[in-house]
Amino acid sequence: MELLITGASGFVGKYVVAAGLRRGHRIKAIVRPETDVTGIPWHDHERLELARIDLLRQPTELTAALTGVEAVIHLAAVKSGNFDEQFAGTVTTTQHLLAAMAAATVARLVAVSTFSVYEYEQKRAHSLLDEDSPLVTAERVVNRDEYSQTKLIQEQLYRKFEQEGGKVTILRPGMIYGREYLWHALLGAEFGSVFLRIGTRGTLPLSYVENCAEAMIIAAESEAAIGQTLNIVDDNLPTQGQYTQALKQRHPSPKLYYCPWVVIKAIAGFGWWMNQTFLKGGVKMPGIAVPAKLHSRFKPLRYTNQRAKTVLNWQPKYSFTASLDRSCGDGELLKV
Image (cartoon, rainbow, N blue to C red; front, top):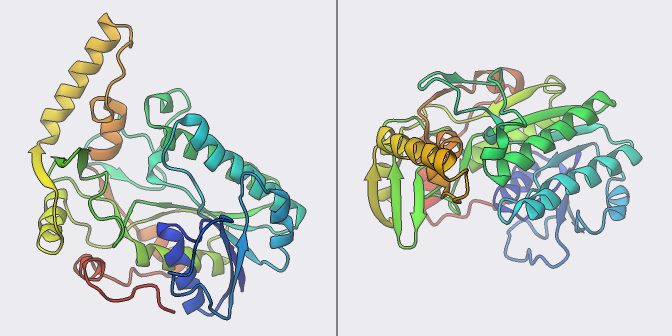
């Protein structure tokens, strides 16, 4: 197949391109015009074509880039900045891509979403979060971060594209981790040189980046995946405590402090009530003091990858231990 992959030079995109090349596909890799890819081992692969396009500012070039493409894997998104910046980098760029796909008559789309679109605050602790779990509503998502807000809008664009004839698979990975991202946001919050760990017994919805990348390529290959929404997480998921302990044995750790989930939940709930009741919401609270954000990151839940394994005939290749060993080792992970 000939695949077009957006966000190809990003943390996840680099591995998705490598996985696609390993599985024998021809890849058109979309990168920003100024991006230096010479340090990525696959940059000069014979089955790779680089397309230097700014999805926000050069939408007209997308249609030409889609010539000959059989499927698109859309990874590009913006995770930082204010709402307008994230809206432009996530929502507007997706609008440009879908318009170009329609113009080029490319219908097959693997759309990469996120667990951030689910409702957490109203979900019972230790219950199962799966593909049938409710999404956060437009009314409630305003209390979440800009990433959740823009990714929810992005999913609505995917659904509209599907209704108009697109052959869409929506993948919702859990927390994608790997060599470039090990002390991640589901473990706690960073304050300067200090990392405040929150919770210890909650299961982490982890997706090791190489496992996740292969699932994305298989989804593009699979006719059975069309019309499906699939959560992508690994097998035998560790708890917060197990992950932290295993990582500390392999990787330098920041200065760690610990706060139990029930304690931080109570503090955040009281602080939110005080702010809303007496200050009319006038005080801007840090993220971990906003209940909606806190629950979406740290509430202890259960997870499953059974639907993805069944639909895609996919099995996560690397166990948790092997994933950490690869992440903390010095072997080349992106060589094709």
